[in-house]
Image (cartoon, rainbow, N blue to C red; front, side):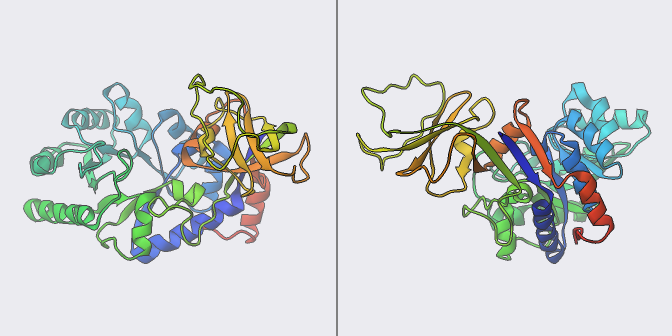
Length: 375
């Protein structure tokens, strides 16, 4: 059997830990559900666990979020595009913005729908993703501040999302100073500084994030426990919320190094193991998952003795070592996943996705007080 399992107990654990961090910091946070690709059972479980703010970047997913968690505050996380303004206003409460023309369109549509649409003004701080240049912030805010049916909920930034630059205290302090400047000049409170994400959480744990940074958008840490700055798993979090099980279709003792001349003819990235020598032999298992299903580079076998040797579109080859570890055809090998691997898995139509326990049992346990909700 080849499947991805999502353990709701482990998800609950991570949610409780992160919620406690946010409470200690005095911050609000939005669960970023992009990686779920609109999986309704997991979204419903988040609602059962007390999640009240969810962000996504696909309108189809957001529609599923609204059905699964009707009372949730919905954040649209992709820069709004003009062709989808009507849907964005209809489906979301908050969006992240950096273009005056787009906010004007949001204002007009919000008037038409008789709604107030909230916005976070995104500021470019070095990651070179979306955001206005800091020098234009005052004029930009002045125009947005007076737009009907638009509420400036806060200012924000994306740090470490595109270029991979590690966030700094100086960048976060810049945002604090920018908010103070705007509030002083316009005599109006700006509630949020939304600059936190999974990449900032190690700084939170080290006490390096200013208290004024009071809103976080968190996805990867919740579902994978990842420490994006130091590597590994963040203190107290689980890295096994999602587990991939891939069935062994062949297992044989073979050479571990290809014979003859090799080229770069493979369409997929190669896996290099410099510890292997020509003529070395060991057991190799072929499992039923491939590059069509996920980013195989983002799979890590639970057994530390196992190493991925390579993958094609439909199969992955795993070196088991000098013995077969008691494994046989029909058994499964378990893998942890990276964010990129999980994103593709959840969007893959070929892989079964199983939520454990089933949602009905989980709901009963919550109702009976056997599963604690987030703090």
